[in-house]
Image (cartoon, rainbow, N blue to C red; front, side):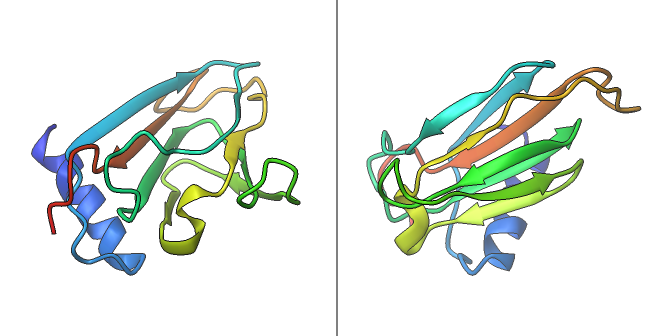
Length: 126
């Protein structure tokens, strides 16, 4: 992963209360108008105690954040260019997703939204 990405994730995780987090993976998703990410849990990593760091770039999106059950009530948060969400601990396995992206234009990313999701995919490193 590029050093600048790693440094961004380290700073965001530390600000979110996870100073020992060190990501070893960055998933980059591109969302064009109409695209969505259905409610899901991030549970493929070996160590589910490590937080998730999510960076939004480009078009705004509505982030849905629920609970441990898919049927739990959802919070809806507007994520804009440059917003960062960090979650871990008790909320690490909460269901989350992105509502269908509305059409628009962003001067830096054009007609799309990009999301950088930093994880510790391997075993515990801290």
